[in-house]
Structure formats: C-alpha cells, structure tokens
Amino acid sequence: MYLIFTAIAALVSTVIWYKNAPEDKYMLSTLSLIYWGATLMWFVDHVMAYLIEGGEFFEITLDATLLGVTVVLLGLLVWLIILLVKDPKKVFYKVLHSKR
Image 1 (cartoon, rainbow, N blue to C red):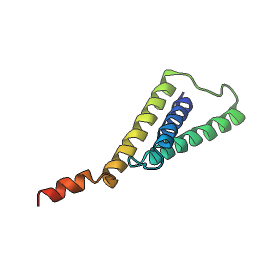
Image 2: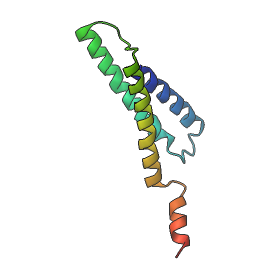
Image 3: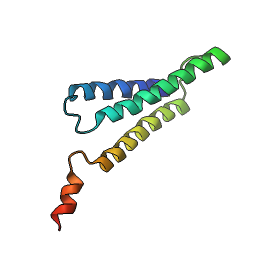
C-alpha cells in the first residue's frame, strides 16, 4: 500500500505543481520530487523483492497502509520545513524587519 500511497501523492502533487508551474512560489516542485523519489525507491524495492522472493507484488496489510500514510505525512512535514526555512513569500522577513 505504501507504494500506491506515495505514487498517488506524487501524481497529485505533480498535477498541482504543473497547474501553478510558472510561479511555483510554494515550492510544489520540491514536494513533487520528494514523493517521486519515495515512489521510485518503493518501486525498486517491490520489484527486487518480487524477483528474489516471489509472492505478491503489492502488500495490502494494515502495517503497509500505516506506513504509506506515515510516508505521505512525513513528506508533507519535510516540505513544510523547507518552505518555512526558504520563506518564498518573505513573510518571516517582513515580520522580523517591521519591528526594528
């Protein structure tokens, strides 16, 4: 399930980024790359496990579902931290410099 969740998150973030691509003031390209990187990692992991061990390609269990939700939320958290540090709209800059 985690491969499915990260792939859906990658597709959704890419579509949203593409609609706002000329500006990208919220750094959605970074969020999209985070999810595509995770999707590629999970895909390679699934292919190698399937070729070596056999069995099912998609793991549909509660643990796999919780891992997928956790990965998507962690990707959002990392993106939010990057967004706050980069401050593309200069919100923190304005707040810090307006008090002087």
